[in-house]
Image (cartoon, rainbow, N blue to C red; front, side, top):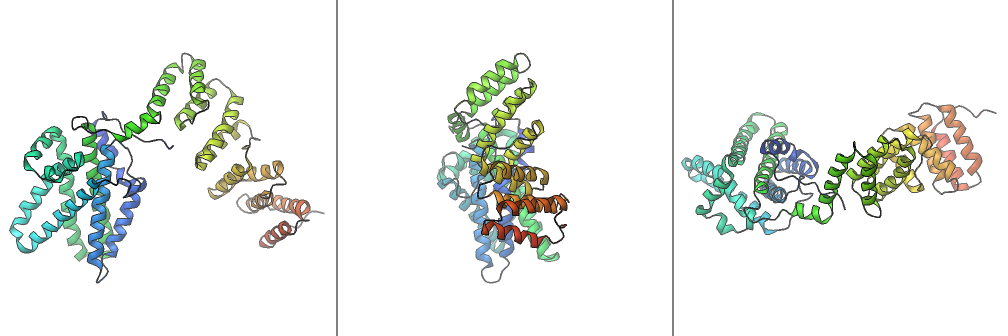
Amino acid sequence: MPRIETVARDMPLGQRLLGGLVYPLRGAALAVCVALTLSHCLARLPGIGWVIEIVTWLATWRYAADCLLHTANGYARAPDTMIEISSAQGWTLALLHVLAATLCVLCALFMPRLLWPLLLALILLLPAIDMLLAFDGNLPAALNPFNWLPVIGQFGPSYLLPVGINLLIGILLLLGARLSDRLPWLLAVPTSAFLATYLILLDFHLMGALIHRRHERFGLVAEAEQLAGQTGQDADQQLLDQVARLETQDPSAALALLVERMQGRHASTPLHQAYRRLLRRQGLRDGLLEHGHIWLAALMAGGEPRRALGVLQECLDLDPTFLPEDARATGELAELGERLGMSRLALHLCTSYLARWPRDPQAVPYGLLAVRLLAGPLGQPREARALLDRLLASYGGQPEQQAAIRALSLQLPSLPEATP
């Protein structure tokens, strides 16, 4: 199971605010910001544009509500999708904000003098209503004015954070409306839409952070902390703290603690990294190589080939002949290395594949990949020709393989002729 990224409830609020600034720009949150920005652009289409605009704002508030609930439960990252949290609270929060926006539009059309007092009231009170809804999903209780002041009092001056961001969102939306009349819409609409979406997600994330800091006072249970405890993450962190204390005084004892924990059980990346650090400290080269095989296999099985490539590079620095024990993993890492521009590493894997598994069906394709690497990015045409000739001599009796080898030869006409 992937490691659950949690946030300590006692993290200083200033640090939480600085971390929150990049919250909408990472992972799923960034993808949602981009998608919603494009949707706002599509809302300029004639006829159906107003429908797209309403749906877009509903989706924006829905995902923002999920971010609030996700953060309140102690998760460090944004939810992966808008349906990850399927509770009615998310939809209630989203619909509430759509209704508030609709009320502002109607007020601007029919009672413009009341617009600014209404906007000011919404800016000040919506955070309290949102957080009340996040507690138990009780809409009547959230709309009860007698419940607003106790909530505001619980958070004190920090309540001004979401209020200030609400104010920025309102100003930005007004500026966006004016800029769209003066600037080309291809510039004004995407910019204002992205910034508005960014601020909304930031606003709801910070409200979730405020709730998480005081969740016990409101009878909430932080789901992320529960899951982390069930999967052993808390125990792992305690073990890592113990290892860090022993590392300088008794590295052998620290190593023994990690060995006991890692035997026969899935181990997280921090445990593997601490284990390798201790092995390096004690100069246990063979242990590093043996662990490299074990961790490589676990990373490939867990769908983390990029991290596996980094472990492979570490092992190659210790032993230039190092190779994964599994043919399939070797081939996949060779292809990944070639895509990432790690040509020499990819060449080593391809030629080693040929040497260790010459009868494997994929031996010739990886041999041809080695030829392309030599002829292209590595700039060694003579070596490429020599390898191509060896492949033809070894596998020329197999019609299918012979055709693939000759096809590559025709694609690389600049290769020198074979040496007699």
